[in-house]
Length: 328
Image (cartoon, rainbow, N blue to C red; front, side, top):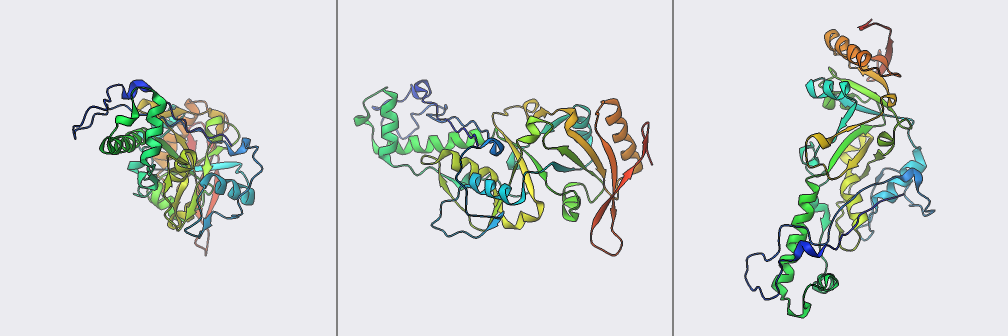
């Protein structure tokens, strides 16, 4: 597993700090003193032989245990395997149609998610001691740390936390599922079964292959970023409440997305392998999507219709024979 959470000791970010400044207004500039988050996780390439004892995706853990979501995800994959295909539910609207025309995934900011606890910065603590922050400032070599007051240390701590929250504002996440037959997912994310569920080949594209399983827990863990930055970011990004376990979610995490265009990240067209129309999807929408797929030259896409299973609360697929831009 490769996960980078790097701290860049950039003296210029705090060059305006003056130990002689006794003012209660912040002497710290708007830059980020010593923190730059860069995230990349690849469990498939992990060489670390250590394994979590947890064997499932839903767990009750003692309060004294430190959560490390990345190890828990590794345990999930050891138990249920790495997926061959992953699925994304969507409403059919102009945003979806544009993403299909231009083969990109949109990486939404977690603040827009339907779960206010998802990726909450409240899962991350900045509880380092005054001494730890003083040691950090001493390493910058910009001034005599013996002149720094306790109040100024508290201002630096608060600035550090605020800068982290600002960086999280440029995070983007794209969500998937291991299942294409979940009735609730069809209802919640595919506009009451009027939308679609699209299938991606997990091994056909580097971006798609970076999707990781979400870890579900009934305990609200907070991790000190100063002590364990990688674990803190992993816990914040990939842990969710057990209430969401039915989603069997995977997600891709990207950082530095400070514009709308940067949130649109392309994937290889070969990775899109199936489009499943909801059981209430209109014929007009079906034909428009088939036309887009044909015109955009996706080489591997087949089309299916989700149907109710007779006598069961279940969904099954019916393959659609497509001629030109018509679905039958």
